[in-house]
Image 1: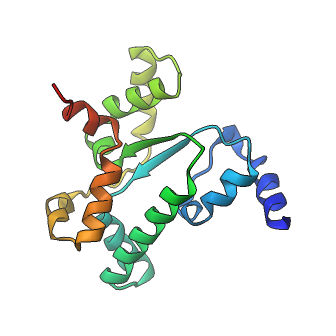
Image 2: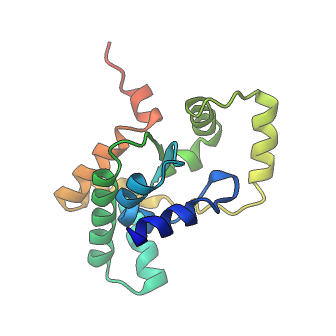
Length: 168
């Protein structure tokens, strides 16, 4: 109960209603239970290999441990988001085709956009560094089966995947 109060209080401090932290995956069920001000979750799916390499470099974890963490975090997220709508964005596609992904995301959020608005947004976004190292996408099929399967299940919820795999 005390934890719920702390989470609710913390959620009220979000600037512009946005918070980003990968550790939220582990506590998302509590957020869903105690924070009625969370309207939508934008979930940025990262390639498990890129995540593992990043954790290996930044935290000194073994590649296998980092892959396992990716799996646990994503399972916890899926189990913890039952009632809050989730929009899944594929990080690899976001980097490769940012205009498409941002247009989709803003449309899903009900935010009207004009091409000029997006052009200004992309110009501003260029100021920030986005890691574009995506050599690992070709290696996904070499992952352990449970990790590969989970990655493809989550990825199937992205707009780009749904657009390119429509049933006729």
